[in-house]
Length: 216
Image 1 (cartoon, rainbow, N blue to C red):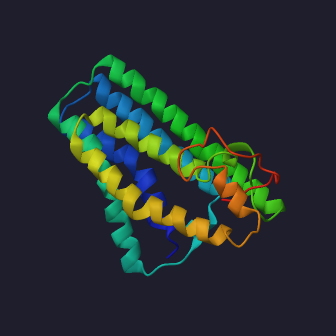
Image 2: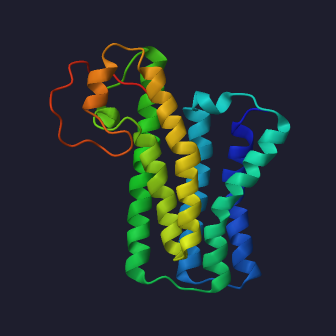
Image 3: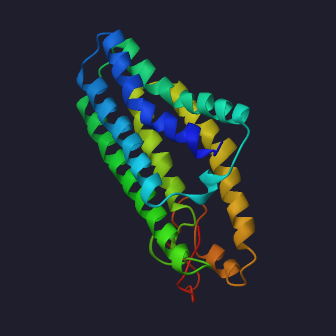
């Protein structure tokens, strides 16, 4: 199967999982509703994104067993709504507002940078050193981190933060390093790397980037 199948199944199933938890624990507080809205909407938008501008790395084929393992690993992201809803904890409104704002920023960075990458590389290969990738080489990953950080904040528990940290350390960072190694074949990459951050934008640079095209 393609690796995107268990990923997409997880994204689409999130709405039913969170809503099911709300009914199971009879929790219809503002925290549960906000979590349902944020996480399930993100999942549905992901499915739309995969239809309009899919990421080719998720088109790779993997053994069925690996696909099943991938699905259950992604299921760790459901720990946050389980803790939030089963505990009956109601997050304070300032925290809810902060989580919503962080989620919106994350979705914006994640999807728009992926769109830039997809349509740039569709018509011209090479480095992409402008737009969302001018100062950050992995704006899409940064957006995804902010999205799941918002979910973890609503749970108000250390475990979702630990799970997010494990995903960052075991999946995001290795993928970013792998991408850097791939891009190093371009002679202009050394200068681009000096003027951009791996995950967070590099706001101050020592010299101007001469080429105006990036990758991802």
